[in-house]
Amino acid sequence: MLLLSMSGCGWIGQSRVADTRSQGSVDNNIYTSPSRSFRIRIPWLTDDATLRDESPTPNTILVTIKDKLCREFVVSERPGFLGTQSLESWVDSHIIDDLKRLGLEVERKSLTTRNGTAIALRYRAPAAAPCSRTTEEDGKRVARKLDADVGWHVYHRDGVFYRLIYLIGIGPEAPSLWYVNRGPVAEVLGQFAEGFEILAIKKPQVGAKAP
Image (cartoon, rainbow, N blue to C red):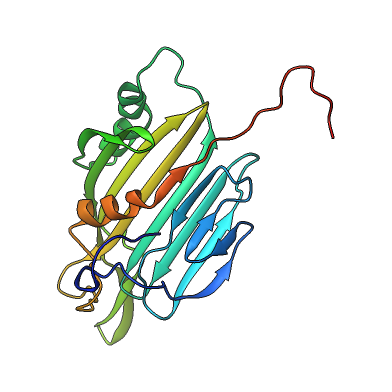
């Protein structure tokens, strides 16, 4: 997922997704969901990056992009209503409270974006990175996941929740490349979000005949 800076920031040119398995379409470096309800520009990635999408439940889509820099970009879409709650209060009760029960300290702020209001979250989670490192302990090789730095953007439009998530492994063993930005997480997630667009869905007119 996404784009708009110079090469030193690692977001120009074509991404390098080596393995794509999706129900949606990828064209000119842009992924479009199967229902054409959203699209997102694919970020600058390492050579062995993967893109997957799936529908874990009806009317939902989960897109995951990973590369060898221990990075993971996620976009999810699922139906749901706010009721009488604001988006901020809904995020507090349905996401932040759960994260706090796990002992995580969560930063939150409201953003104004091209897709409307978004709630941004940021936290660090132990042993939650998308990669692991192998060490020797008592003569045995043991794989342990790195800690993760995680950022979210949560949106709601027309009865649908969208979540953009970016997480990276952190610590001295985390991999890096000079020409690809891994962080700061909020900055890279912000670049990712610039290439995210919720598309207008044309609803059938009342009384219109089906084709």
